[in-house]
Image (cartoon, rainbow, N blue to C red; front, side, top):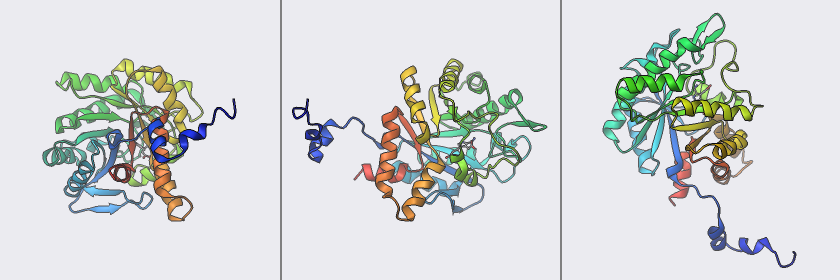
Length: 323
Ligand code: PBG
């Protein structure tokens, strides 16, 4: 075929490259994670995640305005409560940090779509995502707590809830609890294929949710498994999930692609803390071009099949895209 076929013809200049580009990013694709903590006028940078903060409700409202003004449609909220206990009761306290933040943000920035992370690990003294018996994380008793937590978020005005605990049956438990109380229109985005990943390290500092013993491998997925992700997603869809998520993103692009092929629901991917921090760190060392690396990573996640990307880069990337 050479010299008749010369693929370089379509790479000649930016105009033609733009015309044949297969994947495009938009701020519409992003969800920006925010960490809400107790107190007043708190804005504490997370050391391992430069540019990300733990913020009190008053400060998070300002931050939410900034996110909205960049054209990012949604945030996902994580809470750092003042008190933790065995069953994570702050998770479903109507006066908890997340519940307060939802009300304040919906009041001041009503156009911003507020999603909440539903999990126990930020609220339990042991740092696990469920109820502990001995050294075991008990599945079924945890479902009731997760359902209460999701319901309290919906009551506070959350637009969507996102369970990240990986207990079996939690989507159904949450769907039932929401429907019983009339929240039939509140969608569930499930962290459907969530792997036991080393890349959550910086987040656990951010959310103060390091497990006090053991690890999460008895509930989060084994990184070696690909077909199992299809099973997990199928189950969550049966249980009523509206959007399914793969997490992390960069090391699971094959899984994102599989889920996109197999199902017709919107697919989300979580570009997690460690994926963010390694780029930040390498850029700080002068080893990579931060902006190019960021855009390449986000484009790859979209190209693999993600419709929605949860990312700490959302603001930086939106600024690039809005230029
Ligand atoms: C809570 C939760 C975690 C993340 C999102 N929700 C941490 C974990 O499972 O340990 C990770 C997010 C990130 O690393 O950016 N279960």
